[in-house]
Length: 284
Image (cartoon, rainbow, N blue to C red; front, side):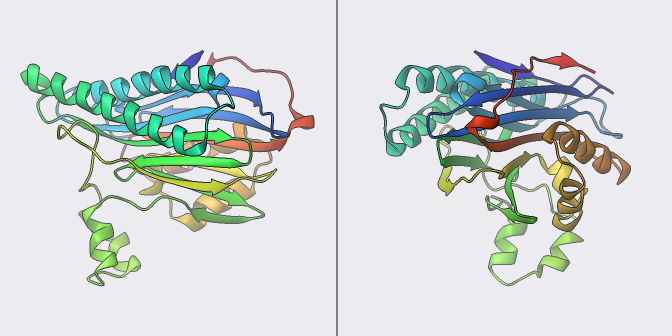
């Protein structure tokens, strides 16, 4: 069943789960979310549906608590609806079918958030970024909207798998800014695509090959704005367990200023024979 993880102000909430695949790989999930050191509330949300090998991360935006509402709606809806479909479909469907299901669930979540924003003045303009990961044997189906990211950590190398839907990324692509200049820009948080802002949203989905000992990192910009890729890689290299690494990333982001909420999901890909006991949600 889907397991939702949310961070209260000043707390770190974690969940660690194992799920064995029929393709001789198992997946260990670790999720951490934290308010950071500046924000009064936490608008980041994460959810894991372990039976479906599904992870969802969202970073909300909007006034008052609207961003928190948008991100919570996105993670709850997608983890529940897509998670149930994946479990019921089992291994009988193709990657194309899964991508279609991802599109449909994100579209439904988008419409629900958009309609709620239009029906309630206090939620006007709310929306959320999104990263959705479905692990199927040796394949990762990864979808995203906005500037929340996913990376792959393999044999000491960190590779960004998503490309930000942001004004800054468009300026980099157009040659108007160098990556070094972009790192100093004041426009880091201007996204060009978000869930719930318009009645239609396009989920960008790609397939990636998985191998034993890969780690998949999903994060909000509260992590990636505080830590560059080299620092993220340094933290990952210093830990052998995803539980320790995920918490260390959050702590490093806070030490760097913690100017935003921080959400991290780490997924360790292991040979199925190494799958251990299941760990259930706990609150720190």
